[in-house]
Structures are given as C-alpha cells and as structure tokens.
Length: 280
Image (cartoon, rainbow, N blue to C red; front, side):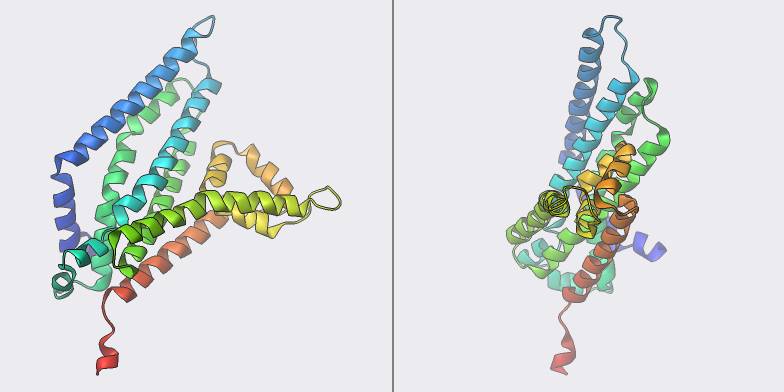
C-alpha cells in the first residue's frame, strides 16, 4: 500500500491536476449551484406551507433529489476524466518514456486512475456539509448516508476502471471516451429497458409474477434501481415480490461491479505493455 501511495505517477498527476485553478473553480461553482438548489428548495417548501415548517418527508425528498443528481454526475463526468488517461499519453508520444521507468504496469494504471477520480471524490466529499443540512429536519438517518456514499465509491471505481481499460485498449482518446459513454448508456439505460422487458415476460400468460432471475440480474446491476432500494427499503420487498428472488439487490451490485472493476484493471495492466515474448 505504501508503494502505491508513493507512486511517482500518482503524485505527479495529483500535483498537475490540483495546481490547476480550473479544478477548484469547478468545485466552487458546483457547491454554489448545489447551495442555491438546496436553499431554494427549502425556501419554496416553507413558503408554500401554512405554518412555514420544513417537514421530514420534504427533507427526504430533497435528499433523494440530491442523491440522484450526484449519481448523474458520477455517470456523466467519470468517463471524461478517465477515458483519456493512457490514450492521451500515447497521442503525446510520452507513453513509451513512461514505460521505460521503474514503475510497474499496475502502478501506472493505479496512479492514472486514482488521480483521475480524485477530483470527483473531492467534489463529492466537499458536498457533505450541504448534505448534512437534511439532518436538521429529519427524515434521513446517518447510516443511510454512509451506505449511499459507499455505493458512490464502488460505482465511481467501476466506471473509472472501464474508462482506463478503454483508454488502454483504444489508441484515440475521442474513441475511448465514446466507448466509455456507450458503456454508461448500457449500464444506466439498457439495463433498465431489459429489466422492464424481463418483468413483462415473467408476467405473460397467467398474469401473475413468476420467478425471473434475469429481471433480478438486470435490477441488481442498474445503479438507479439499487439506489432506489437504498433510499426506500420497502422498494426492495416490492422488487423481490416481482422477481420472486429473496436476495437484496445491493449484494448482486457489489459482487458484479467488484468483479468488473478487477477484470478491467487486470486487462488494462496486461495490455499496457507490449508482449515481448514473441520476439524472443
């Protein structure tokens, strides 16, 4: 672990990224926009009520909206931050120089991926004080916030590993970005479509739900569906009633995306360097 954290690639990339004024300007405008949204929502909710109170159910609604906004940011921004990590080095003709250093392929991939997602991690963490406002009005438990941020971290790592993998396999940065966004469309949109189709197929004929492993699988790998069960635990029971499989969605989500992250990183590490054995 010490070797990974003292990685020269990681240190250099972090210095270049966080010495840039654009990074902190972006976080500043993000926090300003989130603050305007939160305080505007509270002002409208209190002004429309007779007694001027902000109720716990309204606090939970605000928390849910902010949670899905953060999820959308992760799905939208992470591909742009990670899909050019290796391909940009190749386009600038500096990848060969980087490969001649004493750094292993894993250290290079780890340093590039970690430095790319550090900005988004900082953005998410910096929004915690605004998130904490919902605790003043009730409706949300601290444990729920903790589980959601673990969900964010796993999702961020999975998308970052996909972006780094495409950046390693594809020579052009723009093509790697398009491929990564295509994977995000599949994860967020196509899986939801397949979920609806699987549920409809399971109810055909008798009109009553039957066991549908495919519907449960598509639901367990869809970030929006899993997020819904984290925000509203009763939705977990309803989905299990539809699929007839009594397994929480978050278990399948953790297993699938953990394996996907490991597979993408290992593939990127393997394809980073040219296999010289065939030239021996």
